[in-house]
Image 1 (cartoon, one colour):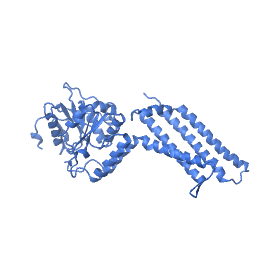
Image 2 (cartoon, rainbow, N blue to C red; image 1 turned 180 degrees about the horizontal axis):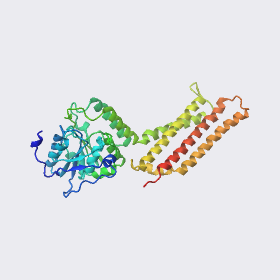
Image 3 (cartoon, rainbow, N blue to C red; image 1 turned 180 degrees about the vertical axis):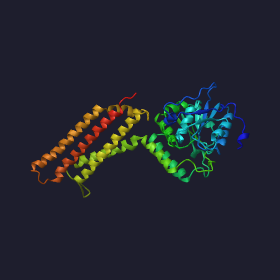
Image 4 (cartoon, one colour; image 1 turned 30 degrees about the horizontal axis):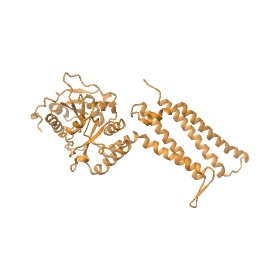
Length: 423
């Protein structure tokens, strides 16, 4: 495309203005979206945000497609190029085509998008990569759904069509489907394509989501937060074409896939820690209670104190997982990383420092008493040989309860620290 002979910008698109985003605001990604530069113009309905890092080859086509689509449908809009430090002249190309350039010095896909969203003046924001892989000529399905009142409108590439060579086979048949399935399970959403880069949302929804990540997991954070906040989410089919960069993409398959998975798991402490820990704790307690009185024989196999020791280990590990889930949820709520869900709002206030100290001291006292009983048995035998099957039935539960008491004590103190009010 000849930039010098490109047609003038549509009169409905706002003129090119360079905006510099504060690095701290871009890094925070959501600690209150920064206000855009003052303007006498009426704010547009839609802001199209394109993250950019050396996209001179494909950026003109993306801007032209978006501009023509919006002008054809009479949508008052602006196009924002969130530049992440391009050195190939992408900024000048964007300005020459009527786009606003937002310089985002904090590196990262999420940081660039956050800078563009912070500068957006439209009621609705549509984000899409500037590599010419997404169809910017078909933005109206997103806008129509946003006008209907949806907070987040996701593109679905699997429903719209993926052209040959547009997505690596490993990503298409394994990575994206598996990660999307995990996301649907963890966050109770029906979204079929968690990582589509073309999506629309209202600025009000972006403020509520309080997005903070700076890397590729920004895409997951948006959908996860919207799901946790019970926002109205829908999908529209979109297509994916091979990008026109002529160079390797910024995406790193395994690294970025792991970052998406890690983010989803850490934002779901119930599934990662609480439920597995609770199951392990219940199995350990049931098995320990069954073996505590005497050995048991099942199908000709005798289970004795060695199995009792395994049960005790399951109890300790399970309790640690449950305690860590409580600590994680407490921290996330106090920092505003996750919304206050109804179950957590009811249960977490019950976990106080005072209650925790009382319970932990009680468990600790029972454990020490059982250990003391085993020592008394040894003293009664003049510290001679003991029947380990009899003695270990006091030692193993006693040591386990003593350890649990100390763990509960420390966890209670930590909860007290996390819930200290800060200005």
